[in-house]
Image (cartoon, rainbow, N blue to C red; front, side):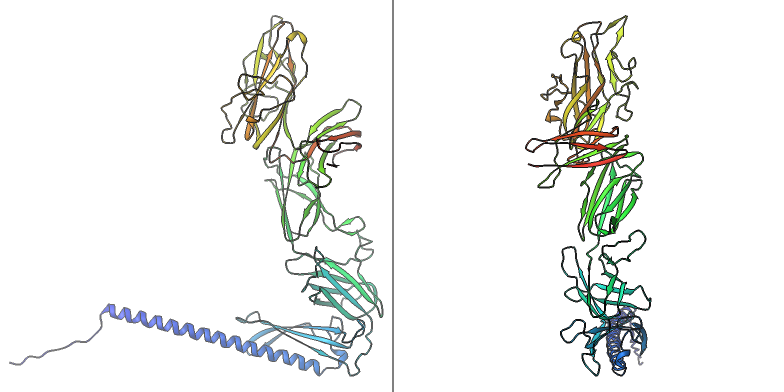
Length: 589
């Protein structure tokens, strides 16, 4: 019997998948290489077409009459369009022409030829590098005198350094058909020859990407009749020099906060730059307002010195950091913080600074008096809390209502005489002692504490010595609710502040929250001591250095005295008008 053997040859599913994957990888690599070669070929083709297009433009210029070589709206005037869109080989090119009278000899007013520059760009082409070609054409009789005059425009930055590549636009205000645009050379200069004469008829503007703008202004214009840099005048046979200054753009961030760093929203102010474009006409002047979160960001802004003037109907500025005017450097971002407090009639902000270093002087004593009963002394760089009424009663943990406090021992009276704390009276006699604990004062951030004061300074003799005493307690930012350990001037719990204006012990520094404890006592049952004012001063990051604010002033003349150890003192007169105003006092070391 014979047998038959059948061999079967084929591929498993795994082998098919592996083979297909390898094929796809090879195919993708081949396709990628092909696509790259195709793109490279297209880029080379676009480049070749662009060069040919530039040659065509020059060939057109060479075959034109010399007088016709110019732009339809430029200097020199001619028949060429400055910008054209041209299609070649499936590519769309943008052709930009620049034509300029040039001097090949020694006189800047003698046009011996014209410079023609052709720029070719292709926005839709991949990997296309713009092409720029230039050449010169000359008249048959070289050194033919140019008609008109010359404009020499120099552009420099805030430090006086020439700016290369700044775009300069020269617009004739006499005829809209003349608009010349070109860029400055490596010396920051653009020289335009053969400009038709005219008095104040050339508006010149200079700018650059990412830079500010500078320009000339019309004479007799509304709001600026006498500009510092008027539109240029060109005289036959003469050169007119025009200087413009631009620099990198900047940003200015403003923030309005209270003395405890809490945002104060919708604060109104004026911001005025120091650069003038005419007599009394600032280049920048705006009425602004911060947002609901107390912030206002201004960008782009030009480098300048800016003065901040509060105009808010409900708030005064108790300080501005840095103090006005604020210097904004080119290409920089600066921040200004305005500390706002409830407005009072006629406020005076006094800033004290070193006249050599031009830095604020903190801890300077500033006294304002008028000889008519007003006399107040403040210390620069210090904030303060001042409570003058307790008639609202106890139960307020955090100081918000100005006439309330945290608690007492039941032996003080805050209601009989509003604005005063006295001992409680029963059947015609005052109790021997009483105690009142304030609400918690929040300074907004870690602070240093300075002086603890109260009024009246002296008490009835029959109440006995030290009939008014205080202790002071602070707590860190992490513990707004204490615990409160009340200490005296030596930093110990068993001692008391007995003289108004005593320095608060430094052991309290570095904390955010504070309370005071008030103690009253009497040696005579028919007499009570009283407190009508309790205050303490502090410094923090939200207290502007070197500044104090006087509020509630009557209009008139005041004597201002400023002193600081190590500096010569200042004494002078100052006139206070209506609203908010500021005054800078410089002291010599």
